[in-house]
Length: 367
Ligand SMILES: [Zn+2]
Image (cartoon, rainbow, N blue to C red; front, side, top):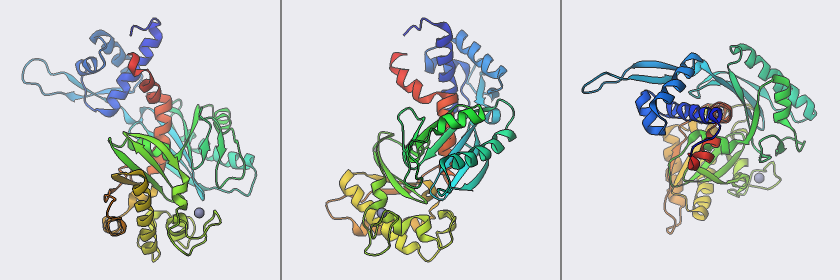
């Protein structure tokens, strides 16, 4: 498609180049031109512009069998940063991350629902300001806020959150006015799936941490997100926060396993309550896979820190509970690691305000 507005065409093509360099370190200008279909002169101008802005740099020469060796290009990871805020039932994490999704700084503050919505926002703003002040001026691309709950389709409003008693908090607007940075909200699970970018196929993606929820992912996209997963009945004891008895969340969430509040799963894998948690998680996985027909299960959120021996035990428990007509799914931890939720929030902001990833995928058929 020939775009009639040159400035728009240049902006879109700049984003395409940035996205390709994000996914493939060491591409040459010629490779970028080939992969985008943009002519070499324009690619050269875009790369020069990105280099002047400090976002892209040369990374050595590429070996070729004959002729001049082209220059490999890479992003300068710390040239642009993003702020990620993850709102959990017990703690909120405020993290500053770079273009490689590496967290360079983070802090945790308690999620206190007993005060007013205004007080809650003020504590988030104060913490966000502490992080932004440490970043070089103008380097923060925007703020990504992830939350367990529902968000308006435009990513502006926190509509409902199971552990905050106030509906319809205009959190994006509040953060933008206080920090002078663009902000967007997304449900935690969707942000985790986006940051994970899982392969094709049918996947059950579990956000396992202070609360438990799951998404059904088909061909890399979350097609259904359900908090009901955390409230599947897996036991005859244990009172859940929802009022029912024996929910998965009441047996296997980090507050259910750890007697001491505020501990993450990474600190709880060797605690006495872990056997019950693994058994409960296995039963829930069997039920969900029987209904959804998922062949792969990804343990995400804090669950991505599961040690190999426990993940083996979970696999064995799932296999022993699986009815004969249900195939045993492959179970693996998320690749996002211990800081999965922070990385997901940072990635949300980078996608939205620097790489414009969802916008690009929506216009790709026209390019
Ligand atoms: Zn429940």
